[in-house]
Image (cartoon, rainbow, N blue to C red; front, side, top):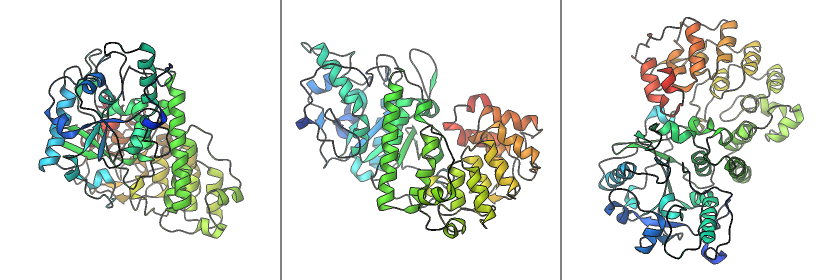
Length: 480
């Protein structure tokens, strides 16, 4: 919801949203205003600029959510200050995409690069789209810019605030989550709006977190880039998009929305602690401090074992599929525990497995994970001083040789790898860095005399990488 309307902290008194009307209270987040949706079939008949909540309500096109409905939540960035889609272009893309799913002419692509080798993705329920419903903020939420005759201002403000505050609950109630991110121009600023800018918005990040951290069986996110292209989101895109760093039109929303993310993550961890799988529980638990902006590390050995549910030190140091002790320590940012585990026999050059659905493909080394997970430079130094080999390679799904240098997340990584004699010629690191890292990191590689014209034997080079992976990277234009 990249909107300038309806702060989460608006106040007022409304007679329209009592407990009897808020049937979407079925999950972690509180729902304080009814969830209104539009039939997909009705939406496909619409044309031009989307009409707001009050107009659709007068026309009888809004329906209150019930659990029997198949609902698609549409997250999008607004393209105007007073209207989400002043030219109607965004909605046209959505209509064409929905119609293409219904008639079978388009499917959500599941390619190896985008799913990082995870083959657990099942088919999207295209057959349910035709009879389904849409949640779109402009349709569902009473807007301050559109008033019906006789509507009390205070009631309108309150209903808007209640609905905005209920968005996380709406996300939880939906069966499918779509991010509508075509490459279009903002009508007021003239700036380009796309996947990268959508991903930069604080509210859009909150919606994304609430979907991916929900306790539903299917938490996939579909990205609609155009009426002909839709892909599943890459796991690292959300893990690097902290709510605390997001852009907010109403700055006072930041603290409120951060609390929503906190609640979603803690609920996910509690659910995984109770129901498993253990690998996912440990992963989210280790990620928690970084995702919530808290201090990392500082465990005693016994505290670490208890925190991550390792019965003994032996269990923490042995190599197995999933989140091993070393992986937990690395992702949690605790270098002291890394050193302790290595001294007690943990294999610092072990390759990971069983983490594809979390964004880490099989055969990555622990050093690669530390770099890709954006750990600080000290963690990379700790691993290399513990005999992690920076030149061990794995083969990516594209057939390219990948080393830790490929996955460097910031300039400090480049400096450490240079100091520790990483071989940048064995596998040209710019091919990886331009797609997943910052402009300053790419600059550091260039200063280290890495050649941007070098390509792999498969023909996969930096220019291809930045165009493929860089869609969610705000630094992509600067890198190019």
